Length: 127
Image 1 (cartoon, one colour):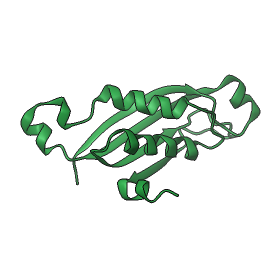
Image 2 (cartoon, helix red, strand yellow):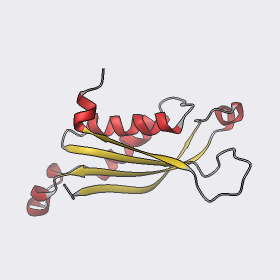
Image 3 (cartoon, helix red, strand yellow):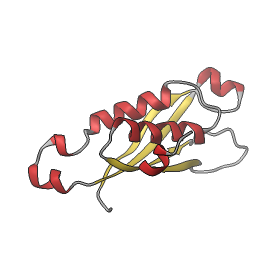
Image 4 (cartoon, one colour):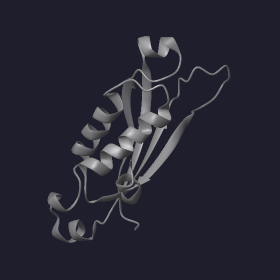
């Protein structure tokens, strides 16, 4: 499926990371979300009920990302992807990229992070 609802560069402050100071002061993360969804009906009906609300997508992502402290951004990204599939039954797959531009790395870099992709089939196979 090629239809997609997306949110790019959602900025959230959270306390994720392995270092102690990351848990204390936190840092700014940027999330990119891409939700695979059939938008055929929405494109014809022009009704919100046939798609997902950007507002609800942002709220769900923010709650899942900030609800607890994760040591790994992989775990935080996975929590957001799982929350998207759980909250929005019409979403077939979710891709979540977490950018950690202030990672404690002794190097000059533009960006680091992870991308997690989850499909409804994977979500149904969770133990």
